[in-house]
Image 1 (cartoon, rainbow, N blue to C red):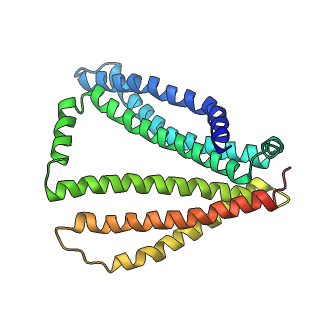
Image 2 (image 1 turned 135 degrees about the vertical axis):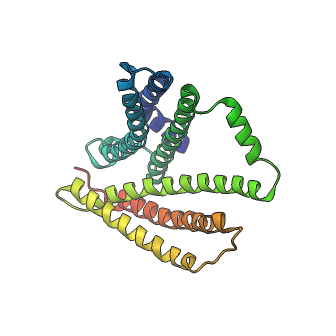
Length: 264
């Protein structure tokens, strides 16, 4: 049943996400070409005016991917679990865990896809504008994967950074879900209550993060390890923290959905 829930959730969310992703794919070369023409133009002409607009438009687009993805994820969950649509959601012959897991996994999928697309858009922009060439990328990859201690550790550092970002994104989504479910315990002004609960959860998790990070303040890594040792330990702590706090948010959300859901 979980597979069917995921398929249904993917089809429902694709109607929002696919047009947004297509929008980015179409606009990336347009903004990049505007910047390229501006960079190649030495004389003062109309493109000197549109060049900064291309830079501004591209920056807004990249930031907009991040913001729009979270807006779609949050509003989708709220609409299908806390409004009149929830009656349809919870009349399905599936467990609360299947509903919650399907929404969470599909949301995480779209967040990862959006992040990958943003990175690809930035790379495409650097190629189109001439800031980088394929030869530059090839040379960088060769240098990074050169078999030497520091280079291989740098690769490990990058992989660890990506894994940490995935865990933090997954936990961040569960934070929103938990806040929305806690808001259902309030009879009036549930949206404001959910926002308040999210602020409280975020503040509490940041406090916990500070407590976890305090031991790192007293670390004194060797000089040759300093660029990577401290962030590496920070990533490990972030992953563990995301797993623990994410599990708490999931349990609270599932418990409210099962025992105390009060749809209006």
